[in-house]
Amino acid sequence: MDFSVESIRKDVGTLSEKEFLIKYLLRSDNWYFSEYQHKSEADSIAQMDALKEIINKNIGVAFHNVLMVGSGKIGCSLSPSKDFKKFDEGDEDSDIDIAIISSKLFDHLWNKIRAEYSIKYLCHYNQITSSIFRGFINEHNFKNIDEIRPDWNNQIDEVNKSLQKHLSIYHSINYRIYRSWEDLEAYHILGIRKLKEKI
Image 1 (cartoon, helix red, strand yellow):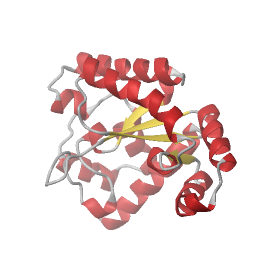
Image 2 (cartoon, one colour):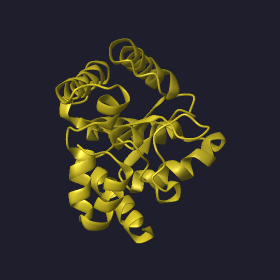
Image 3 (cartoon, helix red, strand yellow):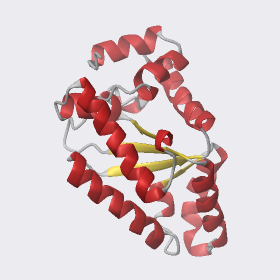
Image 4 (cartoon, one colour):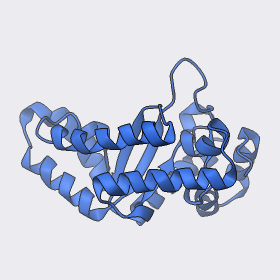
């Protein structure tokens, strides 16, 4: 697959939001494994399957409900403010974004967040409730809540160690938990639409 910025920029302009989403985010092609790690197409798919297995084993979400998104997936950022910035370009290291689609995990975390409501976490609740309304929870929001962080860290630390050991992923990883595939698609289609308006 052609992951050049020129090709991606052209497709943003010519493909529908849904067509772009399928081609670049939902298909098995993966820039990080094929281009950054220089794996063959078959090995790149095997690496992504191994990533899904590791997350499935440690977190208990369905194998096919794990997806790499963002600049690690396609080689550049789709954020309208970043102008197709290439992965690891500039002074800051890029990170890997992993989407986990699980209504069970989403509900579990949301119930824990509600149970731990406290004035000291009020600044985080505004961000959390905004994302909850859109059908996802960002890991960095609930990791600030003391009563939730230890359990999550125990699970995710094992995942991250395994990803380093078995797949040589040394970039930091951000996790976002979506309530459903429809919520994931709606989030990314909105981002693609904003990008289309900008170019």
